[in-house]
Image (cartoon, rainbow, N blue to C red; front, top):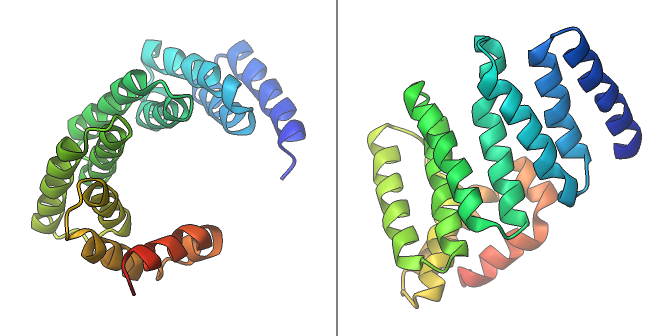
Length: 197
C-alpha cells in the first residue's frame, strides 16, 4: 500500500535488470513502476517496457507484450488519447490471436468495444459486443457480466428497450463476483437501479 516506497525499489530493480541484461525482470520492474506511478507518468514507463520487449529476441521477455499493450491502452484511455489507446488494444488482440489465446482475445475485443463507446460509436460497439457474445457462447465460455454491462451502457444511450435486461444480467453475474462486490459497490448499485430490479 506504500506506492512511493515500492516505486523506489522497482526503479532500482529496473536499473539492475538493465545493467545485468536481465530484460524479463527489467520489463517486469518497468511494468510495476507504471502501476505505482501517477497517471501522467504511467505511459512513459509502459512505453519503455514495450520498446525493450519489442526489441528483444528472448521469448520470455517478449511474452510481456500483450500485458503491456493492454495496460498502455487503458492508461491512454484515462488520458483521453483514444486513438492511441485503440492502436494498443488492437496490438494486444493481434498478439492473443497469433498465440491462440482465445480467452484473452475475448477480453481484448471487449476492450475495443469499450473504446468505441468512449468515442461515441454506440452502434459499432453494440455490433462488436453482439458478435463477441455469440463467439463466446459458441466457444463454451461462461457468460460475462462486464459484457452485459457494456451492452447495457450502449443500449441506454441508443434508447434500446433491451437496456434494462442487459443491466439485470450484468447485475446478476457481477453480484456473484467477490472482488466486484467488495470494490465496486456503487457500480453494482447503479446496475441494479438501471435494471429496475
